[in-house]
Image (cartoon, rainbow, N blue to C red; front, side, top):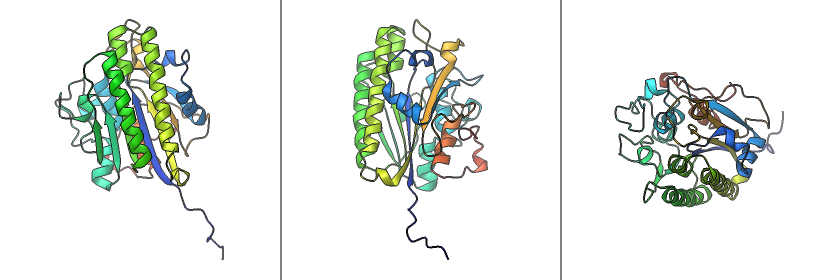
Length: 288
C-alpha cells in the first residue's frame, strides 16, 4: 500500500484580475512595462478583439469581462448601465460570494462599476468593496485616485485573504480622453505598470504565499484613437489585450483566441469552481 503521509498538501487557489482601462495594444511594445512583461513571460500576452456588436466603450467591455457574457445577455451597451440584467448574469466576485460564500474583493474609482450611479453597480455584492472616487475628472485626479486604489489593494492583498479579486485603474483612459495618446498617455501607461508591480509584490509578500496557487490576469477593455477617445470601429479602438500567468499555464504556451467573455470563466476554472450550465456563460477558460 503506498504511503501518502509525505504527500504535499494542494496549494490554495487564488485569482487576481487587474483591469487597466484604455491601454492601446500597439504601444505596449514601445513602452517600458517590466511588470506586465513579467506576467507575459510567465504565461502569455495576447491581443483581444472587442467582440463584434459590442461598442468600444468601458461599460459593455468591463461588464463582459466581469460577467462572462456579452451585452445581449448582461444588457449594458454604454457607460450608463440602466436596463442591465446583472441579477441574472452577475459578476464573478458577486457570484462567488453570494453562491459559494467565498471571500472576494473589488477596488476601483469608476462609479458605475462600484456604486448605484448611472445604473450601476456592475460589481453588485462582492465580499469586500473599496470605492475611492476621483476628486475630479482630470488626468491628475484620476492618477491620484489610482494611487489610493493601489494602496488599498496592496493592504488587502497582503494582509487579508481574498480568494478572487478585481482591481480597476482608470487614469490611462482619462489621460487619453483629455490629452490624446501622446507623451502624457504613455507616461500614464508606465505608471499603471508600476502600480501593477506593487500589487504583484503585495501578493508575493503574503506569509502564506508558498502554500497558494495564484492566477494573475491583466486586461484592458479597449484602445484609443491617436487624438484620444474611443467608441468607434478603428483597429486601434477594437484591439484590447490580456496577459495571464498561473499554475495552469506554461510560459509561452499557445492559448488560441482569447475573448473578454473568457475572463470570468477562467476565474472559475482557476478556483476549481465548475461552471453551472444554467449560468449560460459565453466565455470559456483560456486555451480550452
